[in-house]
Image (cartoon, rainbow, N blue to C red; front, side, top):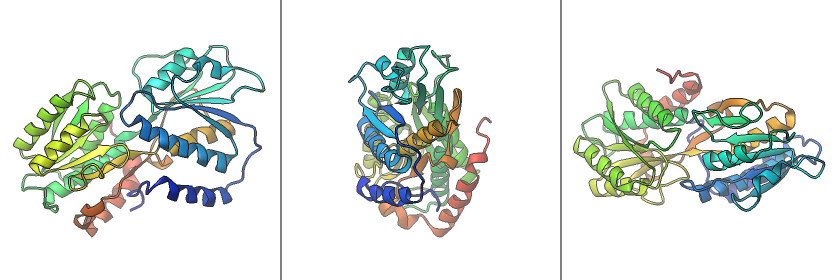
Length: 335
């Protein structure tokens, strides 16, 4: 499968960087980038580790000078200082850091700005002057739904039952929730036309009590695989999965270590690749102001290895997944 792979550790990835660098011609050094890390978000530290790995990739492959800035450690407005000693590009990661950057950015600065993994419905300051980039997470969640739909419909896993039912639990304070929801539900139907998805929505990503109640209700209805959007509520759902002997699919850094028998896989958002893409576009003059998206063709997501579950991912499913991955970028998720 082309994309069913993920990080096996930053040490292994660093070896890739040296190989990747040898095939890339570096532009003239001197391009300076400030990257503001994730702030107050689920898995923020883990994702910041991935960003720091991305910094290493960028410096090796593109020759840019990248400073990783922890949120709150510096005056954000000061990052937009014009002149030879200033930055050429400021990149903010995630909703909170991006909003801080957008409100602090002086309107008359010549320093380019990018908000990565950012989605908001209302207008924001400087929207026509900076690049607002959403991750097309519906593609990855579609693949997760396809896996779940296939397994539950065919009873190919010992923790699945005779009912072709899955569940989706999403937090309404996540602006990407509708995209996860639409992608997962569509993926389940693609793999199992007779299957179904019970959908549950909790007000906030830290509402573990409501997430636990939703997971328990789903199990009573016959669900054997639950997909969770990012949030600390995931822990409560995993606990239900362990008690009721079902499977969970997560979003974020590989979560199988928390419960290897019950976490089937994780949808990993490749922030390191997004950072490399954004900086390369900035250096090449390809950054466009306004809203845009990065998706599967840009290497923005991957599935974590199935681990001990891989024995139940049969050849037919692996071949079907490869086919789905090839066409996922062209699927219309608006309907």
